[in-house]
Length: 100
View 1: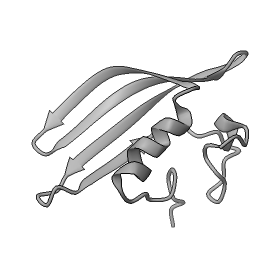
View 2: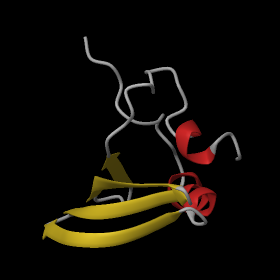
View 3: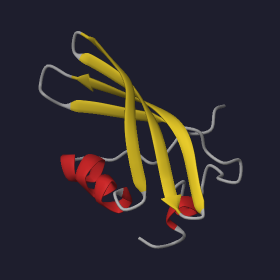
View 4: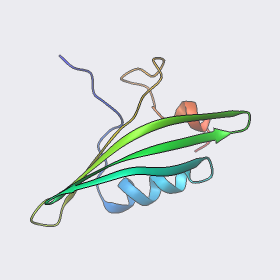
């Protein structure tokens, strides 16, 4: 049995992209390191700097995108999580300090 990875599945463009970006744009800087494209799939690796002084951290993420023939897009994002974030915890709480 495996524990879930990351956050709950999101549906719709706004929930998966705009809302998440708006929530973090004030405390996140992203530097794209590499992009690989293979047919209808794409992956990139990013260096993410997040937080506010004096608590600024850096982590790398791998994000994958797969387009279906009907235009549906599946996005998966992989990044390290603190050990204190359990399967039932909000994985963003440690970054947002409860401010949502």
